[in-house]
Figure 1 (cartoon, chains in turn purple, orange):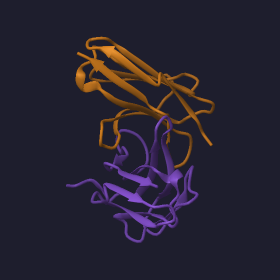
Figure 2 (cartoon, rainbow over the protein chains, first blue to last red):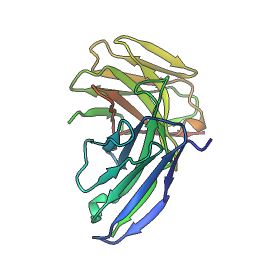
Figure 3 (cartoon, rainbow over the protein chains, first blue to last red):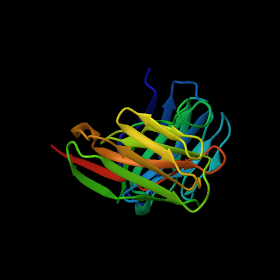
Length: 115
Length: 110
């Protein structure tokens, strides 16, 4: 049981390039989330999905797009990368929202550097 | 948007000491959660709190949901080297989203 898998683990982009981060979960979870983690700022929610085919904006959605075509996958796209998007990106999923009975399961992160 | 103020930002303590960290919010939360993140990994849930005034323990960890629903603390007793990591508070203001604090970096000297 792999849990939440993020690919790639590391990536370096030049300003203006595009890329897609993939998150896959094998727990049949309904809810999936993309966060970015920056020093001194904790985890900030970019976009999330409450089910296949649905997406919604989080706290810092600008410059990112997402898609949830299949329940197990949640893709985060950067159409034109900027240095401000240098960060560590975490994907998370949960079955039903809330608490210890259904905690957020996090992937191990993708470290993205935009030069 | 929602903001959580977590303190302290970092702690460097001697093995065996007790640790205390807290989070405050300007608005009411329905749920408070505490996560731990180790290097190279995603955060893992430690404790979840659902009711104002609730005090919950998980081994050497104890957390409380403040009466005003705007704060929470986490205590770690008799710290050990494997306690090192970043501890995050998180709250659920409403809906299916969590807001995270900036984290407390814990280092333990053995």
